[in-house]
Length: 640
Ligand SMILES: *[C@@H]1O[C@H](CO)[C@@H](O)[C@H](O)[C@H]1NC(C)=O
Ligand SMILES: *[C@@H]1O[C@H](CO)[C@@H](O)[C@H](O)[C@H]1NC(C)=O
Ligand SMILES: *[C@@H]1O[C@H](CO)[C@@H](O)[C@H](O)[C@H]1NC(C)=O
Ligand SMILES: [Ca+2]
Image (cartoon, rainbow, N blue to C red):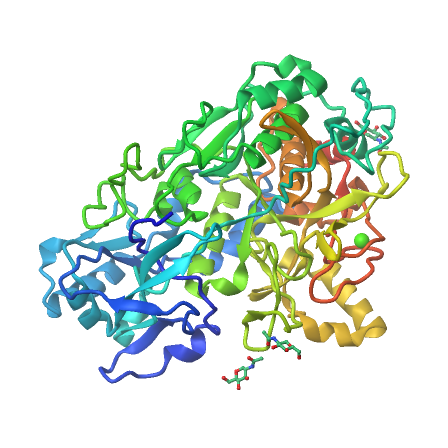
């Protein structure tokens, strides 16, 4: 389907890291602020100089260099202020850009002929917005050339977007500006991480078992059910603080669910949930289109995630953070905007006067941008992933900082590590030495945002053939989906973000082992980068009900809600004991005191840019291993 003009960047081949570019003077005496290498799609036309362009200038926030240490102070189990999270207001105040930066940019705009009354600062102080800007005016200001690009989406539909290849600023302005939109930003469709193939299990036999966690279900090597997961991860805990606890699952248009599918699943696995729905939190017009009036909707992926998450945490209510915007390309920023008003591109959604995307003229289309009106649940489960290499560093850094801020506020953000082993999010190729993805390349291709050190990234395991479901029965997920084509748990090392303090010891032990045993392997990845996944759980053959059929689905899409459910149950125990939720968990799960609450995964291999057998300790296919909820609760209750 042909969509309206989309104002964001393109499927970006990365920017080689921004810094070397920054000091190149351009003709006008500006320096290049941001640049991307040319997109494989070709510009189809220039934009008329009189076209409106909604110009927004993101100011550099203050004190961002302090973020890692502030986060450490509330999330390191050895810290005296462990668990003492910040309020959203405290976070906004701490990082608001200084007024001097805004004045400096205003003076520059005025000197360039932009009337002062057209420039306003957003309420959260992070942005300056220029009303009524045109392409001609912005091209002059930024020394840039805007084109319309046409590209093909995943479904073969064509869409157009506007972008420039680079833009420049005077040095004194570049110093205080984070980035400017619309310029080189990415315009990537989310790779949903499920392998949701229509394999009917009607002919398969699986026994429905009473949920007794003391007995180890068999058959979990072939088909996974909630009982398998409960047995694998020692999940006998019954929630008791459900009135105070919160748990959210992010879902994107056009994924939704059918209540009839949930009920069919619940009747078999969690009878007390029959008739129960997730609580809809609408973001940018998100709807649970249960009636399926919309033929674009897919009831599979979100449906099976809900079937598992709701079953694993029952009777804890589950929120569905449904992002509805079907017109712009989907971005993780939509839910980040919704839960943190200070992250928004505008204050309240009424600043899109000049944005041709909003309000969406289509019937039922998005009229308002959700900004800061959603209270972040304590745990946020995200079953999507993209490619790190596809984004400019400014964009990644801003998003990664936001994940750290959520951690500071006591929110656990869980993301998929991808389904393509070391070759990225899904259906990935490896990278060549220039950072481009191609069929003959050999270097690891990191997933985003798994490669941001401030999210918790989930890899995949599978139950070993013939094993009963009990702690320790797993190996790395690696599944032949069609003959010769494997999918496996994501893992790797960031090319953009350095290794954070909390995983240095664990990851360096792995790298040192490799240096002895297989030094050639070190060439394939950035040995100094943030390593992922952080932990892993079973990721294959989830039995589920999809549009009335019983099928099995594989993917870290299903692994993420399991981890999120486990953390939600830990939060329940802590809330019931009068403690705070766990927030950013990585420093805890890598700490020596928690090692015995994880089962090390020591066998199996993932795929991608050269697979490898995995062994003792942390490894880049299974992280610190698989969780044991019973033991985790004991240990987490012992923390302040
Ligand atoms: C990398 O870039 C250089 C310089 O543009 C080029 O000569 C080389 O062929 C590129 N390598 C690959 C693998 O594309
Ligand atoms: C990969 O290598 C094969 C064989 O050397 C060659 O035929 C093919 O064109 C290459 N593909 C790319 C994308 O470079
Ligand atoms: C499961 O957790 C309980 C605590 O709830 C613990 O006593 C038990 O040893 C754990 N089981 C295993 C197999 O680790
Ligand atoms: Ca291991």
